[in-house]
Structure formats: C-alpha cells, structure tokens
Length: 221
Image 1 (spheres, rainbow, N blue to C red):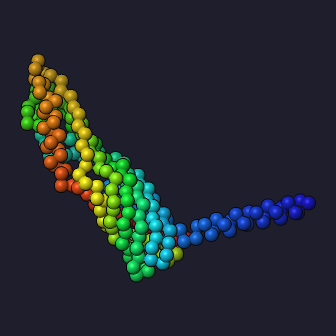
Image 2: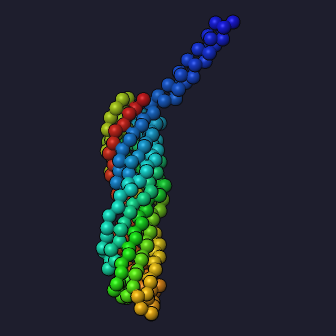
Image 3: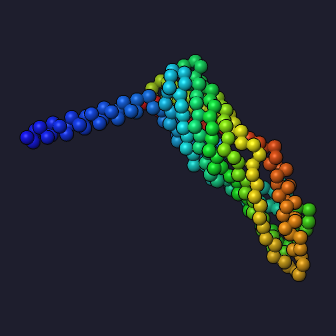
C-alpha cells in the first residue's frame, strides 16, 4: 500500500514538473536598464518565428539634479517607472527586431525650489521666504523602437533597444508659498505663480516624447 501511495506521489510530481517545463519552453526573460524607465524586467514569448509578444515592468530611474532655467534654483527628482506591452517583429529570424507597443507611464519629475530674500517668481519680485513646487507628468503613450535581442535562439544573449514613447508634452502642476519679510511684500504671489507655470511650460513644450534607450541581458528557455 505504501509503495502504491509513493508511486502515485512520484508520478504526480513528475507530471507537474513536466508541465512546468512545457509552460516555460520558449519563454524569454530579460533584465535591463533604460533611460527614464530605469531597472526593468521583461518577459517575451514567440507567437511565430518572426513575431513575439513582450511585456516589461520597470522601477524608474530615481535620480536627482538641480536646474536653474528660471530665477529659482530647483531640485529635480525623477520618480516612477514605465511599463510596456509590445509586439516585436524579427524580419530576419535573428536578434534584430522592430517593435510597436503601448506604455503605462508612471514616470514624473518633481521640482522643488526654495529661496529667501529678494526672489523673482514669474515676472515679479518678492521679499521673503519663497517655496515653489512643480510636478511634471507624462501620459500613457504608444511606442516605436528597434533593436537587437530576445533572439528566438535558446540560451543567454544581450539586448539593446532605441526608440520613443510618444507621450505629448507633459502635464504640469505648480504650487507655492510666500512668507512676507515685511507687510505686503508677497502681494500678487498667486498671479506670479501662474507666470512661473507658463515659463516652465515653455521650457518643456518641445519635449513631446520621451526617448527610449535600454540595454541588458536575456535568456530564452
């Protein structure tokens, strides 16, 4: 009886293992790092010899820098990843591919500026402690790219991809405070914030897409 039970358990385990192997057969995995998207994990699966579907989850860049494009010195921080579903076309049945897809875009820039004394905001100057916070967020968007990687050949490889996320110009939100050094020195601050917002929008108006540039390693089961 015990032998029958053990035989049944071993048989079931082997069946599960064989099904798992079949399920992973031809699945591709990639770990890469990209501009704007940051650290990224990708999974791909071939539909035909020349077409494969690919999904990507990214964690974002998480970098910070300073910008002084206006009168206020901003500390700018990048946050959020860009997730993507794409269809890759391998015209030569090798690593080269053309890709079209759609991105769920959580990438944003947060800019925080703080100045004291005589501070220009928009087109006006105020005397006091001034803080301005701005947030740039890009929409979900279609993508186009080309590259090398995710080869139909099994085993390890590398990947490189260049293209664009066609997001349109970023959405901008701005807020701020002004603490008077003397009575009335912050009068008209809210109107000045609108002028500052217009300046920032002009600075980013031409950035109607985000570049895609990433590289990493792949493995095909």
